[in-house]
Image (tube, rainbow, N blue to C red; front, side, top):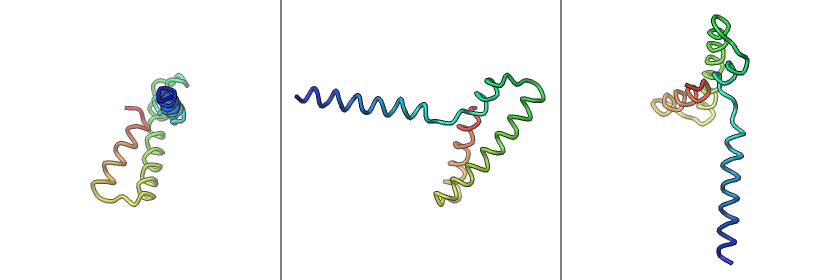
Length: 85
C-alpha cells in the first residue's frame, strides 16, 4: 500500500515539474531563432526584447517590494533568464 502512495506522489511531482517547464515564456534568443532573424534585424529585436524584459523585471521587483542589493540581484537574474543568455 505504501508503495502505491509513494508512486502516486512521485508521479504527481514529476507531472508538476514537467508542466512547469512548458509554462515558461520563451526567451528572446529562442524567439529570434524561431523567427530566423539575423544582422540588423536580430540586433534590433534583441535590444527591444531586453528593454522590455528590464521593464517587466523592474515591475516584478517593485511588486515584491525588493530594494538595494536584493533588487539588483533579482533584476539581473530575471533579465538574464528572459533574454536567454
